[in-house]
Structure formats: C-alpha cells, structure tokens
Image 1 (cartoon, helix red, strand yellow):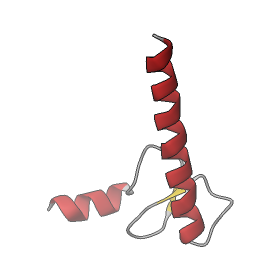
Image 2 (tube, helix red, strand yellow):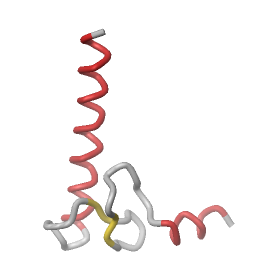
Image 3 (tube, one colour):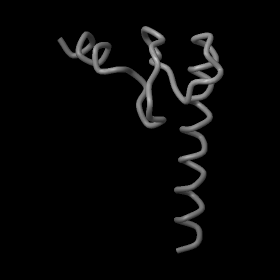
Image 4 (tube, rainbow, N blue to C red):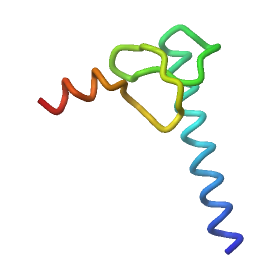
Length: 59
C-alpha cells in the first residue's frame, strides 16, 4: 500500500515538473503549465495541450 501511494506521488511530481518546464520553455516561468504546441497558459498540470490544439490534431 505504501509503495502504491509513493508511486502515485512521484508520478504527480513528475507531471508537475514537466508542466513547469513547458511554462519556462514558453517564456513564462511564473505559470503552472503551458501548451506544448502553441504555448498558451494552462491552469492544470495534467494537460499537455490546450483544447484548441487537441482539436487540431484529432481532425
């Protein structure tokens, strides 16, 4: 049980750090996250692309 909780916490931390790196790469280190395609600000850390960029890749 402890190992599972630890893994979940580490996965969340990796996602947070990746999101922060995308924001820094977009030129906004104060943001929590940025879209990997267009660089717009994302409010959550579990998304890689904004809704507009996701729609463009699906169509």
